[in-house]
Length: 148
Image (tube, rainbow, N blue to C red; front, side, top):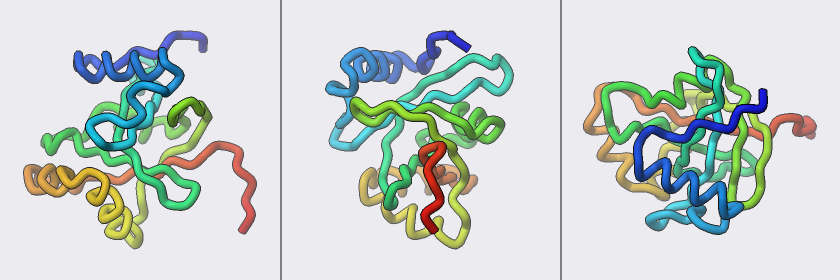
């Protein structure tokens, strides 16, 4: 599929994503003091690529993102898309790669939540504002050899 990604419908997010992508990651990687990556999912209904910027953390070679949706009652649309199709494209700074996303297992969720709230403390408030458990998504590069 050769479609250009559709950026977030939220104006400031779309501007941030465009600046990040067009600059090859030199603008927007650090945004309001937190590292951001770009993630492109495939729309579960449209089949079109959809791109947004998310705060990320690291756990070894894995990238972590939080489906907070600012504490809203519903999960963000990008999260629904990656549940339907976990193959994603990621840009971290200048590096672009294919990856696979999955939910953090319950047995590691608390540790990863602490990592992410250390990067963006507002996640704690977002969790208080909603009755849903805010998911943590783990993103791993596609095609990485299993060294275990």
